[in-house]
Length: 145
Image (cartoon, rainbow, N blue to C red; front, side, top):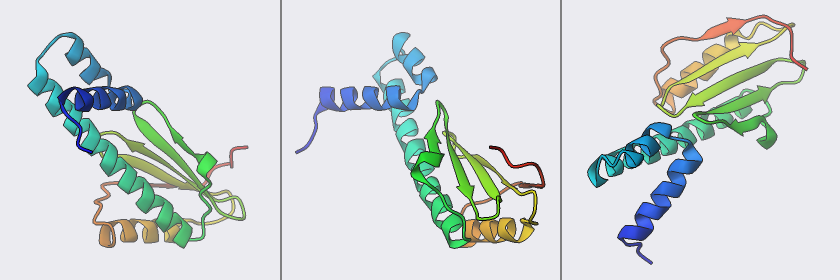
């Protein structure tokens, strides 16, 4: 079943509300026109799709590296998705995937050196998933409760 005009706009509005794209909602309120709205809506939907694909890639790689990623540890926030991957022994990695296709991550442990895991993660992102990583942080800090 193909959707038509008003249904597409309504679906897009619902998606924008879920994504929390305040800039697009403000543009709509200021009546910038349907073309401006459509352009922003398409960009937001594309960004959401890229973020979802990146999220799947991160979860898959972390599981390959021996980390556990539970569904309850993947949390959607206003403009980013938070992922917590944990490993036996207390090591963990945190990820923030932003709506503009960038993301931050950090591997942390009190007991282990995670440079190897961080390097393998980065290599898999770049070679298997073709994702460029501009910088990374590896720290040794206390584990959160």
